[in-house]
Length: 241
Image (cartoon, rainbow, N blue to C red; front, side, top):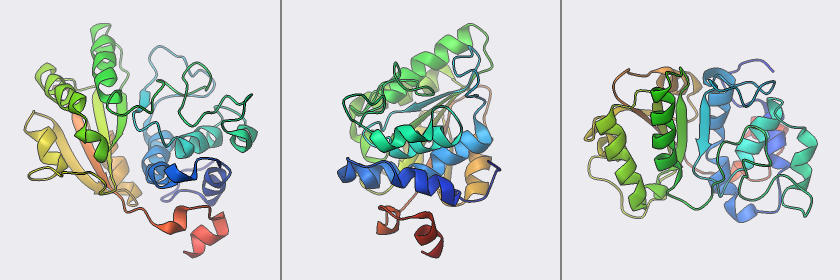
């Protein structure tokens, strides 16, 4: 599948095949642009060797909405696309929350919010300690930042200068309280390099995700607006929307 400046129609069709947890569709679909750009243009990880010790790690902290991640992993060959038609059945490997022991390409079991970034800090420390070139990219939601564990992780990562750690905040404006100066400011005050982009601007998103600094972590705040056009559309309908 070739690199594009938009999510390919065939990937949108794969997302639409994931059914059974429609209440979390907006959460899942809001991550699609970020996850697609990461796997298509940024992450160094291969379905031929998904456990390579120096692979980049993608941690979906926002695990209660895994449909887009499942679709992208299937599109990239980590598992058969037919698995998408049987999510959360008794015999399915794909659950409403992802399981790293069952799904190739999934790095952590997640869904209970507020854990992924702290896990990412520990993972980045370990990789740095053994001299690995691997990056750790953690996707969180804007509302997930209300969980206090994230703020401990933000502070620790900044103090330790984890240049191999990137946090992507998918900002669909669902947080309950907001942050003085915006989400980026919350990270910047702790020493993170911060960037704000529109999730649908794949060129800007790619540039921001590829940019790292050796002695401090990075955050990319990807602004997205959840719209009904992502809910159960076909590829043709998405293109026409």
